[in-house]
Length: 245
Image (cartoon, rainbow, N blue to C red; front, side, top):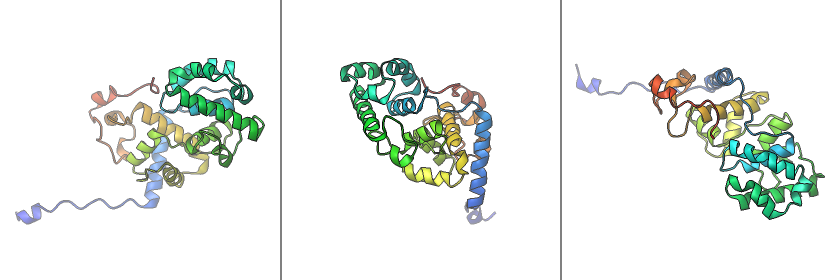
């Protein structure tokens, strides 16, 4: 056999068309919906104000830790007016277990004061208004809109960004560009639940350092299959039944 011919690498697979990308992305979401039928917001909340506050507090900590301090926090400060008037030291004591307690206390005081001063103590239901509040970016705003106001939104947290790049849905790294790129692949009505599906998968199987590839229901549609263990037994050991502690 001609060695020159043997050295020629196989032809690269054809590039994915925009239509096939949409079909694959929506198939992945359908499988995730079947895999995580209970997917939803893992932060506990009773109203839009509580969700706004606990989402701000969830930065650089886990939802479970935020959920643990929530009852004490809202028993003491049930609305923006009482939280805006809170004693700083007392508020710091409550949020202390979450880390970065001074910065988080400052955010809550400013956020609550802004709600009282600008919106008569009510959480606004528009993204353009929410992102003007201290400590509130598009990610937090979309969490609140999607889960308290039924306004579709895509929540680009670290899990979501990591997974959509692994899925080959986008190569973007800027959260706003990721939001727009992924949003173009799905009907707007699906955005909020899509976010929950992807985030749940990121917390339970598609881990940052060692994804459970061999126990992943998306294996046949994921171009990143093999980044983690492909052996079913080894991969199953990595699967978590709930979000991080």
